[in-house]
Length: 148
Image (cartoon, rainbow, N blue to C red; front, side, top):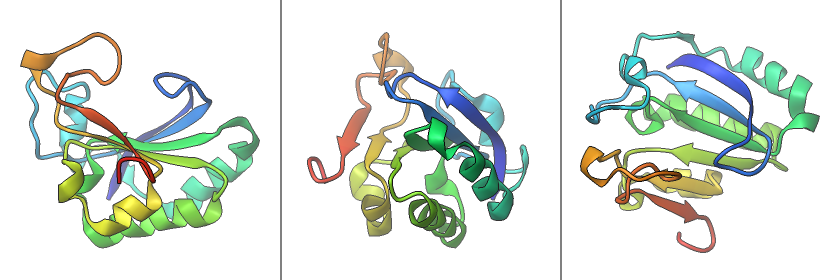
């Protein structure tokens, strides 16, 4: 799995200090995609989990949320995705984990629902574009223990 970027700090739409991890690769091909370069699975550099954890560990006092976006984690190798997310949850149990995916909640493997506190679902639909968050009306923000 390739990582295109790790962005810190990020404050919106979360309303808390956030680190965003951008995975490379998506098959949804949404019209007017927010990150079209990240549709390419070879964009960025190969994930080095030890480097990522060290980067986050050095900054852990300054963020509340780790968000996995992209690209789309849903289209990654499931074993690699599970390794990344379970490692994040294990190393940073006090942090909220967010996922941005074009998949619907019923399509996600059960382990996603155990790891992520919030999941934004639904592909971007240009015909349902709206201001603010989420960016199209068909998308939904799901909270663990409330929506799943």
